[in-house]
Image 1 (cartoon, rainbow, N blue to C red):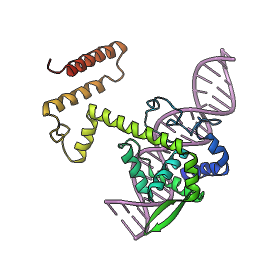
Image 2: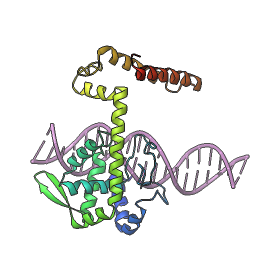
Image 3: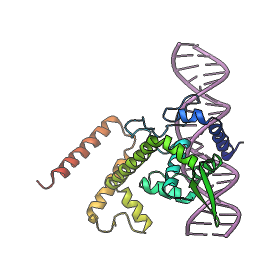
Image 4: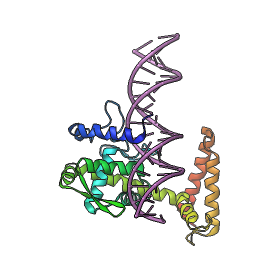
Length: 229
DNA sequence: CGATCTATGTCTGTTAGCGT
DNA sequence: ACGCTAACAGACATAGATCG
């Protein structure tokens, strides 16, 4: 069996050999094998809400561009790149080491980044070549970063509404779900939690049942919006 | 514990082969 | 030509090992 890194390196090599092709490919959807570039939604993608699932979010080319833009801001090592992306997207996108390190190695191999050994760490710096490539694709980088940030914000709002953000923080700090540090009263958190459970329990329910749930939620939303009037 | 690297599993889309 | 399905391939996450 061919291992992931072999495959990834082979994949990277193909891009290296076909740099001109790659630059043309950036900005369009997958051709030929049909997968890869623009998967998460390139600059020409619309809506941003589609393909909103676990799994690949950026193509390798996109990721390399994003990493270069981070390196342009300041030299980073791999772990910092992961953290920076996670931070920028409110935790929505934190590429795995299996993506980031090979991408950094690729950037080094292609001369777009240089490496300075910093103890047991490798600090990557953008090179002139990398800066040139980045400038050639500046629009795309801005679009990707903008979309990542926007989705991160959206995720944050969704989590807040459904309490997942609180769940996350609560578990991280050893608190119960109902304990959010006093932002909401206990009864409200319990009710929210009950609502979440009820909806989850009806995943896959029939159309009629879903309509019933939707009308209940819509009515609840209407009453909440109306306040105590 | 942070940083890096490696092996393996999973998911998803493509391709090819087959029967109708 | 069309639809179905198994095999295949690409992209990625995750777990774990290693090192300082």
